[in-house]
Length: 236
Image 1: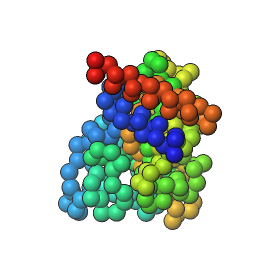
Image 2 (image 1 turned 120 degrees about the vertical axis):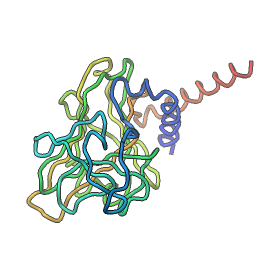
Image 3 (image 1 turned 135 degrees about the vertical axis):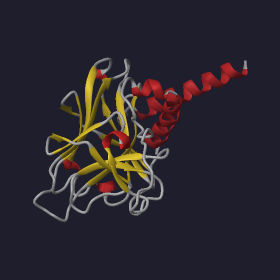
Image 4 (image 1 turned 30 degrees about the vertical axis):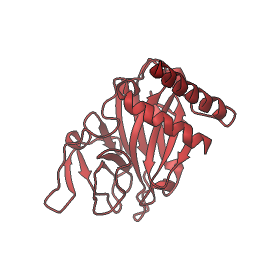
């Protein structure tokens, strides 16, 4: 509960400081999508450039230029964005869009971009939506990887709500450097009926560390102190 409150406060703070939280990375909230309902209803195939500006993607190690809006596959590998009122799947966690990666018959899938990690960053935080098995990273969390600069980053569950989970990883040693941020999903091939999906949203770099049980109270105290100081200054 304490960890949840601390990171909820952090999320509100970073909305106001979005530019700092992104560094030179682009479209970390997936809100730059240029999509509209297609001829088959509220979903369509579209270009990667339109669906996920600022991002690149690959399937089986081969760069792709296509993506999907408001749909996932039964057993294929793909990337794309979800907006509101999808035919099947969860609503965006925050704002109007969220990204997703899915690995199946086509091979391993990756979504990535390169940018400057803001100076002073101590953690990288992201959210995953619940729905269609994504809350369990079906069929297993070991298939999903986050890497920075080619190095896999261990990530930890920070808090959970009815609609999403928030995860974080320590990036202190990489602050101020240019690195590739990559989300990867390992394929389930040759299993044709299992195609794991992860829905991503609200990605940010933060000056707050990934809290450990022993530091949770300190983190909460620091947030409370900052809030009190700002309120006191405002009332003078």
